[in-house]
Amino acid sequence: MYEKLTKEFFLRDVLEVAPDLLGKYLVINQKKGGITRYLITEVEAYRGEEDKACHASKGRTKRTEIMYHEGGKIYVYLVYGMYWMLNIVTGEKDNPQAVLIRGVKNFQGPGILSRKFKINGSFYGEDLSDSNRIWIENSYKKSDFYTAPRIGINYAGDEWKNKSWRFVLKDE
DNA sequence: TCAGTGATTAGG
DNA sequence: CTAATCACTGAG
Image (cartoon, rainbow, N blue to C red; front, side):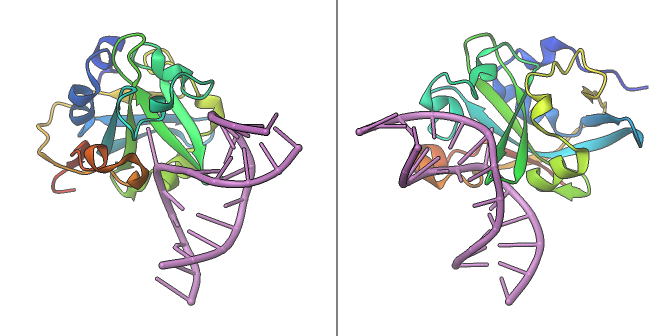
């Protein structure tokens, strides 16, 4: 049986946690349909107030508050009036970072992923190591991945737009 | 390519 | 209160 990841896993820097999440399992427990596991295939890192693509670059607000907590919590928000984005807060307290779950096996795209899993605002702040409806499980397979620029952040300016902070699992 | 869609944010 | 913005998707 796989092990649920504990808080320590998420307390590291987002650039360590993000690639480490590839090949692990996102586990969703829905009342109807029961427990399902999905292989994480694509993620992006958003790192600190200086990262112009990170929501925390605009400082601490009600929405970004959770990113200032210590790692292991869920950060969700609605974009374009339709799509919930699923993020995992990483790093130490007062160091705003998060990993966007951009794709799982058979479900590429963060919007449709959340629609399928019925992720919504009620997941905001949920603790991944202490939740009965969403968590991450370890896997022992070696994950080969490549990196690429993040998507949908043209507003961030060249320096941040061009960083290869998107991590994609190979051969999936 | 481009519009739908509504929470969030800054500003008056 | 107003108006702009937006870590997306699916249709054409």
